[in-house]
Image (tube, rainbow, N blue to C red):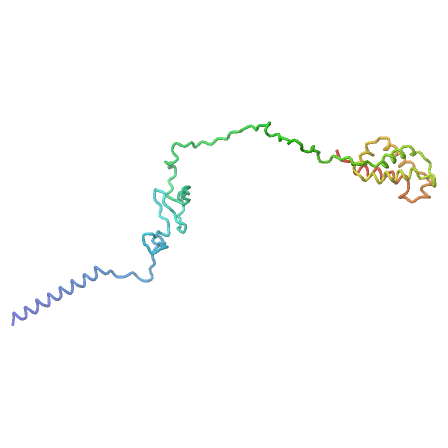
Length: 242
């Protein structure tokens, strides 16, 4: 009986040891899962555009002391040294080290200077091609192709008859003044009137000499003094400014 009890105790001990070993192995191989409420940190998030894990890269750029490629959809921390690769057109970044020298720029001149070059005045003068029309400055009054003989006739009549007495039947001076007033609105003929001292004296003489009989017998627009005044004002208005 004692031997049977001893065998039963040994069997129970062996079974208990085996059960304890199995439970400890399961606990070591399969750790408890993380709570569902926990999410991965921002630094651990990856961006994957393909199914190949090797082509994934972190969402937040991780800088080092060397320049690395920066993807377009990566977040860059502040304070990095960022540059553009002129050969590939891609953006690269690394840790910014104040005062660090760029080995790629070693031996290149870094001084800046401004050099003033005097212009060559001989080349600045434009060359005029042969056969080009003659330059005419703005404001020059062009002479009409066909001059009106009536204008010069009216000038002489006003000069000759400026002292003529008023007569209802005599209209030589009035007709010449009316014709001269029409020409005075043209810039060229207005310049001819203001440039002739004799005709200016004659017009001012007629303007200041008022005949009482003419005032009573003619309308204001037909009077000699009115025609002389309008001729002078139109000629001065159309005279080119100097």
